[in-house]
Amino acid sequence: LGDRLRLERLINATDKSLTSGHDVVAGLSKTPKTLPAKYFYDDLGSQLFEQICELPEYYLTRTETAILQTYAVEIAQLTGSCELVELGSGSATKTRILLDAYDQLGYPLRYMPIDISAGILESSAFALLADYPTLEVHGLVSTYEQALQRLNLPQLPTRMLCFLGSTLGNLNLQECDLFFEQVAGALRIGEYFLLGVDLKASALKPKSLIHAAYNDAQAVSAAFNLNMLSHLNHKFDGNFDLATFQHSAIYNERSHQVEMYLTSTKAQTISLRSLLLTTTLQSGEAILTEISRKFDLQQLEADLSHKGLHKIRVWTDPNQWFALILCQL
Ligand code: AVI
Image (cartoon, rainbow, N blue to C red):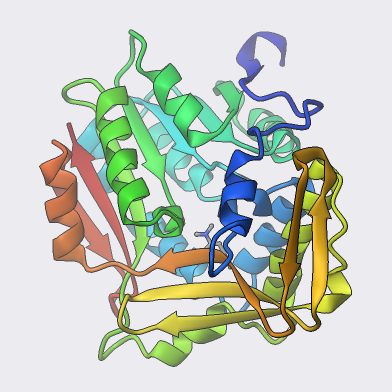
């Protein structure tokens, strides 16, 4: 495989500070308390997320996959030959649909997966190289911010930056605004941005559907949510007792977002020793661990175009649950 694979770590896994933990301290010092969603994704968390994607209730992945399967060749025809750069590549299952389309049109296959979890990045890169004999992979173990700064370097081929799975929904309004700016800053004129987003509840999309996706019968979502605490325990020498927290997720109709919480079932004191942080929780006190925003297409297109990312085409499923937007800088 040698010359077809390059993996670079912009973050060091043995270094206990994915960040300084400053964001954890800030979130737990607020009322109500919050924790940053990126701490879901240690290797186990990434695996649990892959399991979520296969749950019957989690319609997002299969709906986006179906849209990609239907339109990948059209996407490849619109962009022409380009390198695929993917933020939050995970297992890269959906990427294969795009690679197949570019391959079918006879374009060379280049892929730059970017993920915060080294384990999943490596295993997905090996699997792709085995299945695509001409593919070249240059992976980055990195946060989105680091990677986008890094992409802002002169490179030869045209690139299409892919951000699939509605991960955009996990950013709040300000973060989203900044993210679009960073994307626009990382791309050169004429390059592409392919964005997959989950849409708001509507006549064709009951709220109960969205609710069930985050409250599955097998409780994988609950395990995923709780795993953040064990990740924080390892990373910051913490003493969260997972048995004293309960998962919940609600669809907030006013803000069109799912809110995921971990609620303490008793009054307790938590410490994260390497952060020198001690905090108390009341019985019944909830920590917000994630928002998952659901989008209005017109609003989103306006926000993108405001940052110079102009819509080329939009594709949805027949029920308009999910959308793929191709933009060009
Ligand atoms: C990664 N992200 C798009 C998922 C979502 O649906 O917001 C994370 C997730 N949280 C709970 N289930 C899945």
